[in-house]
Length: 398
Ligand SMILES: Cc1cc2nc3c(=O)[nH]c(=O)nc-3n(C[C@H](O)[C@H](O)[C@H](O)COP(=O)(O)O)c2cc1C
Image: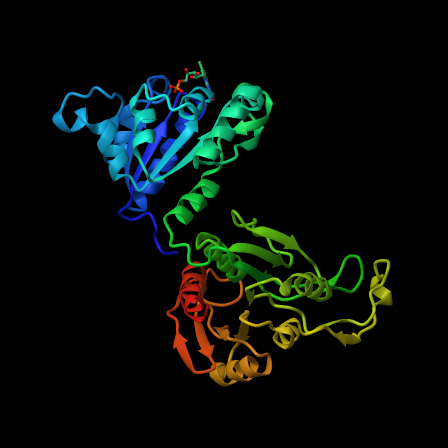
């Protein structure tokens, strides 16, 4: 994926929570992504982790006091916030949340929060009783009203051996929200519907017909659309993938389930991207109980499934953009063009599945994009990068 963090000034505010050690890994990841990370620690935070840890990982000075010694440090409470592209406060204690909610500026971190006009992201981390206390609830509500982005903590076992809500959010989720904040919001207000993965066509309760689709391409398309500001619904066949951050996932099994789920929503959607590998046929009969080995008939009788893309093309509304994917092993251009026309598509991405390092199950893809009036050969690259490049083209259609 395009490295959105490269060259960005990210201020990380670390406060006095037991979860402070976890964000050392976050700093390391951001530094590897070539972000310029400056860490500000509260006095309490330094009881948990040393400033040296963050200095070594970020390659930058860690700021601990408003009243520094050098000329530049003496104005750090202004300059850090002024130059920031993002302020992330993680872990955020109940105490710092209360200070921020009330505009208190009694240390370098809270003063920086008042100075900066960059996006402020806050990741609360505390015991679940502290988190659900009315004072904290009210303070978080105030933070949201100010326009700060408060990311929900996770649920689970905490250091205090209590289970509940209050664990520091997972980095993968936080990273997606930060990436979104640093990405141009080209699809803000747009409803995007994406289908992904295979379908399963049951023979009996134990057996089904399916295909090799992993869902990775569709999930990459969903991730990229979320980052660009779209309201994304992902209708997914069975996959091993976890739901991309910020995406509304609807899980389905069979082609008919997918047809119903898509058609129910398609009318109110601005952009539909159909990456799923839907079974063309299903077994004519589904046995209620598992068929015994000796009762299995050597021939399968099949029935045709509905063609979702064809149906969407027929029902396409004014201004709606319809994008299809095709997996082909030969005559990519001719096969893609036929499908583009037959199904009334605006764009088709033809996957070359003839190689071993692209297409089904692979992390990479090699895609030919076909429009009614032209074509683009995308490079052999990761599915996530392919998704980004496809969305770059979809922007031009919308
Ligand atoms: C071992 C230990 C762990 C703590 N963990 C948390 C925590 O996870 N969340 C929290 O809000 N406070 C926690 N506290 C309390 C804060 O450190 C305390 O409220 C402090 O004043 C916070 O200061 P700060 O917000 O300026 O960093 C913890 C205290 C101790 C002694």
